Length: 543
Image (cartoon, rainbow, N blue to C red; front, side, top):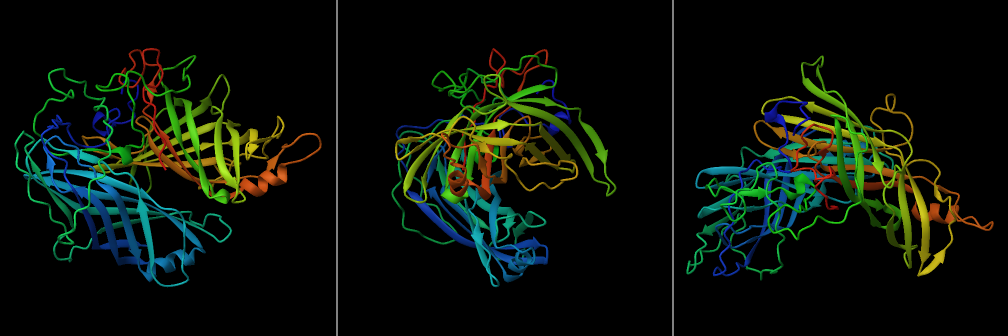
């Protein structure tokens, strides 16, 4: 990306791509009948590094796969769950922290082998908070969208389970974060287990008219009764924007057989809707203007969206597509006392909507007190500086990235309807202070603010996985909604009603940032920017 060179080219994200795979030409033949599905449910032995030491755990994976596929046909795992059965020792580690509940996020590496060619994908999942037992084991089940894949070569495609990263966010009985606020567990298949860690084998046949269907695949659980395919239409994705489309092939790729590839939808976070992509409807989704008035060579812009839980109302409201303008700071190379090498890049930013530092207005609908349908029109208003601190740990071959986004946001209520009847909240209804998160470095970052964390990995010579400021991705956090003030008119205060209905801790936030547009460089990367220098990519929210 021109104008952004905080690390060597081999370490940078290539545009909107996330998977380390070369695109193949999908040639879906109409004559090949739709395959039925095979349901996989397998329990695999793993070893996890816990605070109390290495412990054996069981990882149970369920998913549905097509029984067979044709070359060029999209293979999409569905109904994927990953359940980690933590032993009593791991539960003791949580109770020692005073944890009453815990929320989990998982990242499972899945290997793909076909005709001695290999590739990898990451299956990511999240889970709602569950109670921590006083003793005994604990099962944590995560779910989420996973990458689809295609291959242009016939032959058995074998999927195997690899390393698993499990991030735990424990909370005390009153909803506060523990100290430390998170635990990250690194798990790997048990090297002493017999039979390895296979998930499924999918026969892939040449997609030509008259091709005989291949025999059904096998799985570690043995034969399974096939279930009818749901037959839902699968959305097509734009090609890798880092490699300009070639006009001599159906989807702009070279067509050279290079093995399986994936659509890293969950890892990448946003799925771009690009007006220039083949097969796109001709225009990107609606998005507010995102224009940098006086750009510098380090100016970036991006769209964000996502979801935020409202724990008291047992629901979630959408964070609307919003513009963020970012000024990237100077990257600094640092060697720490332990010998680790880091690339630190500080940046600042602000929301931008019609000249104000806020999101566009958005509506959230809940059942207040469990029975009254209530719709509120809301705005998130930025009340102080937004800081974006990126830290890339340089280790060969994987370079680990962590990015903290900190921003003070006040929640303003513009209007409320209860069961269709307007409730006058007045012109000044808002939270009495900014939304708050646990701050890992309060001495450096005092005050009330939201904290979001994005984790990524830059694989030497290939692409990025997870979140990077330049390429975007998912950022997550947990927020406390403060009490409300200034709500109501004509001497009737609604502060206590809104506070009782909405305010409180433990509200999970998942924000998706799109690919940035490098606005201020002499020749902007037009794969990432529109002609009028706005972000080309409009992300979609993910739960």
